[in-house]
Image (cartoon, rainbow, N blue to C red; front, side):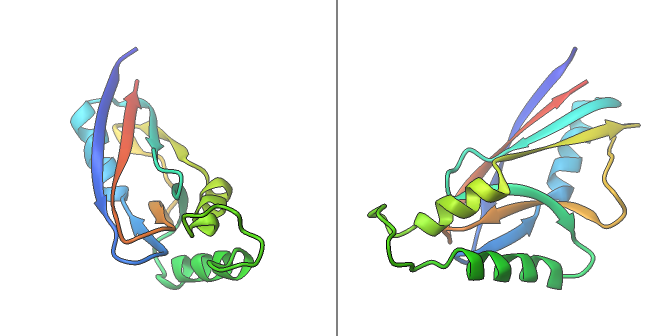
Length: 135
C-alpha cells in the first residue's frame, strides 16, 4: 500500500468562513499517482474543521455558517474557556476534524455538487490541512 502525504496552507479572512479546497486536494491526488484508494483530509486545529457539502450555490456555505452561529453564538453566558473562542471549539467538534474521500480512476469520488471545505471558526488565521493519499 502506497502513502503520499502533503500539507496545504490555508489563509482565512473572516472569523467564520468556509473555503473550498477541492482543487488543492484533487491536485494532491493527481500528484500522488494513486488510481484507486482514499484521501484523508485532516485539520490539526481545535477551532476549525473539514466538511463536504455543496459548492454550486454560495448560499449553502452561508446558510451553514448562519445556522451554526445561531445555534452556537460567539458570546454566550456561561462559557468558561477564557480565550473567548468557546463557540469555535464547539463548532469544530460538531463539524469534525477530517473527511475521507474515495479515489477512483485517479480522481476524488465526490457527488456532482459536492466539494471539500475548510471551515474556519476563529479567524482570520493562517492554517494547515494535512492530506494522506493511500492506494
